[in-house]
Image 1 (cartoon, one colour):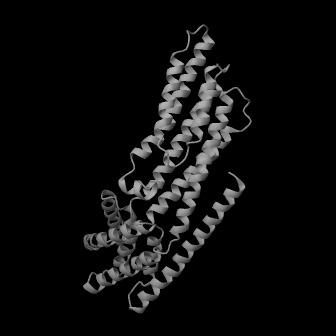
Image 2: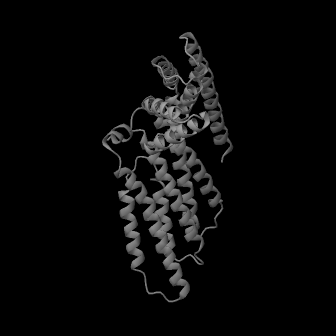
Image 3: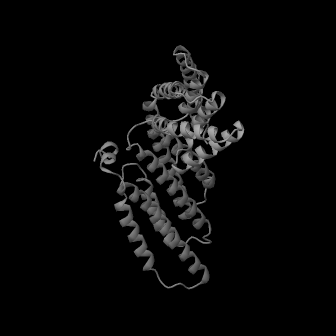
Length: 343
């Protein structure tokens, strides 16, 4: 990874961790203070609930908060049933956790389990299922998740979006360079660059970009930012195609004359590896290259047969490379076209 890019990403991560730590520290302390202020028992648990809830994005925080409120009712009932059924506290608590785990897993809300475990422990300590005790646990839950909901609204999404746009441009620049290197090699020139290294580095970057794009989308309440996730996944697929293409090219023993036509096409194609391009023209030109290859003379040797087969594999890789972009564009919804393509 280039030193400048790596340093910039490390700084961003550093400040993100600091902001997250500040939210956790301040939010947990505030939740505990409010619980004490309202005279609640187990006031420190409000801070734990804030901690467990704040470790998510905005949208995940909202969903998790809803799940925890809904499953609270089940947790109270199961705790009451288990503690009434078993005289042994540890058996009752174990059965409580088993049932709540199965329930949360069944409905896909495993993330709500941790807070329910804390609530069950409180009932185990007090054996009190009065309205006052249940209200105490509910208030702890509401204070904890409310603080988390408020603090998770403070995210620097504007700067993160600009980072994502810059990463998109950097990805396109890297892909163009790799395509040009492969085109030069296919035209008979000696390969000067470490294309394998460039591909591996780009794959690592794209994994990071996809993770950041997912987090960005989770910090909005709209679906259209999924555009960035789909974009980087499309580029990662293209990167994989170029790895296959590089393998095919390296297997050619002697570059045939036809390879120069493909190299010329790749040089032209590299110019259009940009965000707002529908590769219809490039696919049409590629079909012309296919037609030219099919019109070639008869094969006269085993080496020539193998080289021609590899050439056709290269053309199919190039078609796949372009089709990934074509499919990405075709799958854009109206909102994404309007926002990102001004269409």
